[in-house]
Image (cartoon, rainbow, N blue to C red):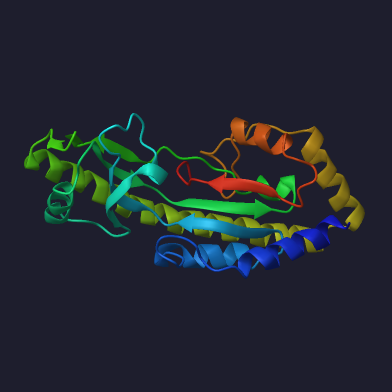
Length: 238
C-alpha cells in the first residue's frame, strides 16, 4: 500500500473524530498552531493542551501522581486566584498536588524529516504537594506564593506558544520554497542524507527545527508498518 495514501487516509479518519478531551474542544491559545499543522499534508494533531493549572487529589492510598486515577479538584487554562484553590482544597481527602503544565501537542508525522522540525521537550512546569491525607500542610501565604509562580509560568507559556508558532511557520515556509526551488533529484538526495548524516541540533541556535537525542532514538526505532511518526512537542528551548 502507498504509504502517502495511507497517511492521508489515517489523517482524515483521525481529524473527523469527536474531541474526547475533558474540555471537548481545542484550547483558544493553541487553535492557530493546531490549524497550521493540520493544514500541512505531512502533519496532523491527535491531541493538544495549551497549558493549564490543575489541582489533583490522588487519594488516601495513592503512592504516585497518576492523573487518570486522581480526582480533579480544579483545572483552568487561565491564571487562577487563591480563593478558588482554597475552596477546592477543602474537597481533598488524600494528597493534593498543585501543578502547572505547559503546552503539549501530540503530532503524527509522515516521515522522519518532518518529525525533526517538531520534536521538542520542555521542563517548564511546576508540581507541589499541598495536603497529606486531607490535611493542609502549608500556609495560605505559601499557597498564594505558588499561585503567583504558576500564573507567571502561564503567561510565559503563552509567549512561548507565539514564538513557537512563528518559528514553525517560518520553517515550513522555508521548506516549501526549498521544495519548489530544487530539482527532484537534489531533493531526494537531500532527504536520503538526513537518515545517514544526522547531527545533534542545538535548540539555542535553531529556529523551528529541534530534536533531542531521546526523540531521535524513538523515531529511529518506530514501527516501520506505521504510516506516520508520532512526535510530542513541549516548547521550551526556543
